[in-house]
Image 1 (cartoon, rainbow, N blue to C red):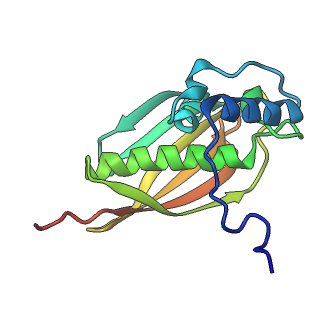
Image 2: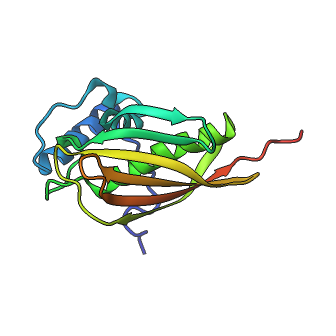
Length: 173
């Protein structure tokens, strides 16, 4: 009996050119026919995309750390309903939550353990949002942050995220 299709075959990693072509085809399928930025070929392209929609980031050192920034809903971040894509909300929540956690614990190695988001209301194309992260709990091995997304004009809460970051233990060799 022959092995099932795909079993025993090694999955090949696409070349940067293939990856770029697939990404462009994906965006064209969504109706976005804009060229990809040069940074799309870098290994941290996802982070560059998230950073590209954020602006004016500030870190407050008074009391527990807070990180706030402005998010402008552009064509690169919307879904078919002209509202911000849920994946972009999660990506921004992770990035801003991680920045807040880093402000609290310094340069220790961390990784995302859990991320949950409540989608309370939609944010439309070209609207501006205030994104603010703060520490909910900080322990020896875990940091929990909350991230609020509010419309800048009305202060209406649209999305609320909670991210749990685990601090990597230091080797005692």
